[in-house]
Length: 343
Ligand code: PEP
Ligand code: MN
Image (tube, rainbow, N blue to C red; front, side, top):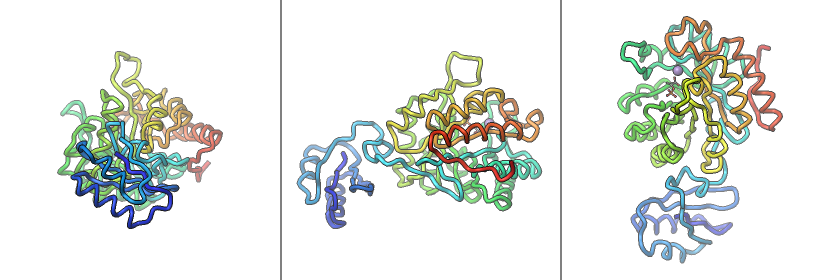
């Protein structure tokens, strides 16, 4: 349920509602909006709770939350959430770009890519140190060494570092180096990981599971929000279908759909979404046109030599071109993207 306070309701009145919610055995979650404050009452449905809360002073009305996800829903919070970390702004008219290699491979590689990313006007550097690979014989990432290299790249560029955390027990380690914890597609429904990642208080990039429905995706985000962490980005990265002309199928309708159903910012990853470098730029532009608040893009100085996902990595040249096209569309639609410092 949502308790909608009257315009101008006092802090004491809000506090009283919170106490009543807790006395009823429910959890409270306050959202201070531009016009009025609402207090969400979360938990099992209780007989008489609606009536009990309705009588509180300063309360305008009590309405049920229809969506199965509560804190993620636009029913509870209408204003879009913006995720902000270092110079990266994702949401509310700002398109945040997180680009970089699939995996951190060496000091030279990550520092070179970081420079390219920075010069392109992007504000986030992606790079896997712990890699979820289909085959146990494939490169598994440089692990802590990779995290150290990412931190070095941040020191040199000021870019926000986004990197995957694959297990709950790795959260403290990855959180020491990263600015944003990425929960990968394969782990979208790893609930203990979502909770521990959420409790770290760090911004989270949650990738959609390849077979997850939108409700499942949003309920996964709800696990993070329930820890009190509001800095959550949803990342559409493609789903499994019968199609085999692309690695995954990238359903861009999920962007406007998510904007209707949740206030969380939506990022699109056209690299995994297509699995083909030749399709990435066009789908990045299309993602911006569909309303994406951010992009995650894989790039590599020499894709042929990449230790993972080279087939979907843009070269620096194609990446710069893609960013220029995305910026044209973003500007036409009244949204902002970082400007390149080197033409
Ligand atoms: C990645 O971003 O490198 C990655 C492994 O992505 P996903 O979890 O979407 O497969
Ligand atoms: Mn990858």
